[in-house]
Length: 138
Ligand code: GDP
Image (cartoon, helix red, strand yellow):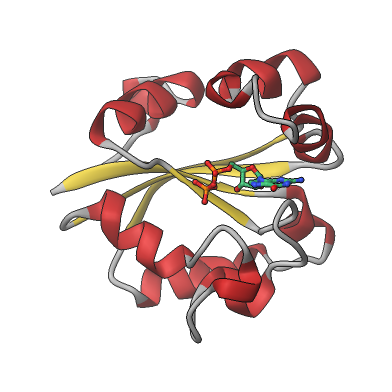
């Protein structure tokens, strides 16, 4: 069993699609162990995406992530990190497989609906960025 950090991005909360995305997450076999809706500050968004600070799209990405509320989640399942990346689909929704969250819901390469941790190490760091252990119920 693994845990991964998921974020439903502002394009999802703006269009009232939180439940629709959660349905796809749960239908894929992942369990939502923890979940909360937050308005990120610019400082928090910049810290969360610090690995991307040299990328040309860093400022646009951070501004998009604070453009409305997000839903942060801890997901659990077998190989949850890779499994959720498959359920999410490719970063650019134009390249995402049929049936994936991004293919179905994403608006653009930036407003691409969901974030999922990309490694075990990042999953641990990202989960602890948003949640304390007592907020995560097995
Ligand atoms: P992910 O792991 O699939 O989320 O993709 P990355 O780690 O490469 O990028 C992080 C996030 O930055 C993506 O989910 C997008 O929201 C955004 N992003 C990635 N590439 C681009 C780009 O070329 N332009 C813009 N504006 N945003 C991008």
